[in-house]
Image 1 (tube, one colour):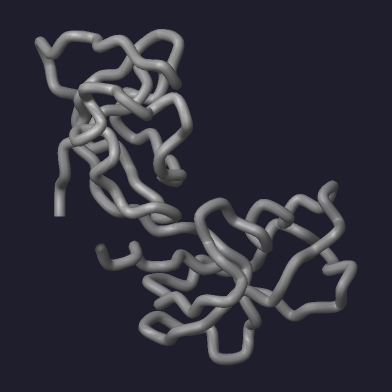
Image 2: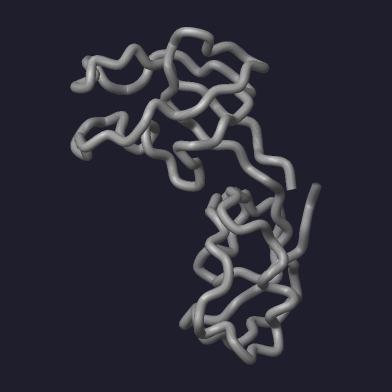
Length: 149
């Protein structure tokens, strides 16, 4: 479902994905709060349209202001246990990984995905980008379905 919200002008491009972090202290007293703070905290979104002709509004958080955009919930790529990893199944992340240099680290700890929650697998992508898991985990790269609002 498409929603209209305000985001920083640097992020206001079709295809940009972000995780909504909620209200910042600088939002207090802002006249545009209702238009900015209308997403679900911790959920991932993808910009699907930028409102043309809309003005750039001043913002206490974004130094170049904010613009109106259309967003939809977005899924996330993640490494999960290979056992039971198939489209339609529900699974959780395996847990934190201290090996930040690993090419798979961003998929083992994807932004906007919590370790203690289960997510539905929309698609099995295939092998993860690493050759060997330093934690000896047998992992598969999947795309999680967008979270329901």
